[in-house]
Amino acid sequence: MPNSLLLQALQRQNQDRPPVWLMRQAGRYLPDYQALRRKHTLRELFFTPKLAAEVTRMPVEQLGVDAAILFSDITVISLALGFKLDFNEGPILEPMWNGASDLPRLDVRSVLAPIGETVSLLKGDVPLIGFCGGPFTVASYLIEKHSGSDLPKTKQWLYRDPASFCRLLDQITDASCDYLQMQVEAGASAIQIFDSWAHVLSEEQFKQVCIPYWKKLLASVGVPGIVFARGNSFRVETIEAALPAAISVDWQVPVGALRKKSKAVLQGNLDPDLLFAPSEVVQEKTEALLESMRGDPAFIVNLGHGVKPGTPVESVRTLIETVRNFKR
Ligand code: CP3
Image 1 (cartoon, protein in one colour):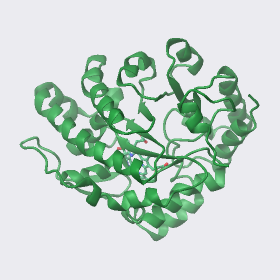
Image 2 (cartoon, rainbow, N blue to C red; image 1 turned 180 degrees about the vertical axis):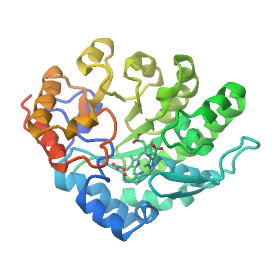
Image 3 (cartoon, helix red, strand yellow; image 1 turned 90 degrees about the horizontal axis):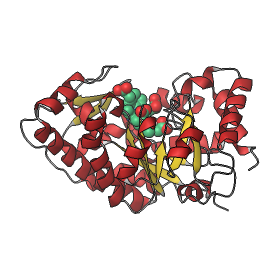
């Protein structure tokens, strides 16, 4: 029988143990992924449907997570906006956007066709989560080289000329709507928006450059949508305005406390660094999280951000096994 825990939880109707999957579960720390990486460039992995599907399946087959997340990257949408894109450690984009004119608008479904094909190869026992970047975060990659900065060029642009900045967000959003729809038509059962760099924004800016664009993206797909913005778990009530099915939260605030403020489906919220602790500690913290949400029909276990490179696979296994063994 297909595993429907994730979809049940996204409808707030889960009567079983909570589902578990992890952001960035598909790459990095998995030995089989590293072996594939020695044979192929990242670009090959992202754009060869057979390979991308193989990486997507790894954590499902090897670790028993309750959902797959498409193996791709949030920056691929830039190809449909006329940029060149390659990867070394992180994405490399050319040219940087200078705001002088609107971007070309290529046909998303042709430019990103291999990703649609990857999704269509992934009809398995667990639901597939499609994704895109939050328009603000994607914009930041079009504007500057990241390398751990707090996005000065992006924010200065927003202060200097909000109208052209928002026009850029509109263009990214329109292309991302097409991109998500392509993933859903190919078989994705849910989608997640990763606005990973939204923690640099003030409350006012967050309402200006995240919420309306998420709302448009979420309304355009016919499946439940999860939103993730790093460092924003204290803003669940603000986030509800975008009408997501679920809010992915980090470890700043205990999920039990967030449940008192919000009826939304909550996803989270273990610290990725916890996975570097001994197994007993991983088990203990995971059990404490499960206990704090016992009986909640609208809870999904995840980390508060992606699995880090170098994470011991055994710790990930312990986390997942602990959730799978939990009796509701
Ligand atoms: O981590 C997050 O905040 C999630 C959102 C996000 C993704 N890509 C989703 C993703 C972000 C912020 C990116 C940008 C990006 N792309 C980075 C971060 C660089 C920075 O500026 O800090 C990096 C290193 C890349 C390139 C990239 N993307 C690599 C090398 C890989 C492969 C494996 C890995 O994680 O190292 C990816 C895959 C990727 N990016 C996935 C997702 C959801 C695939 C799914 C998965 O790994 O589970």
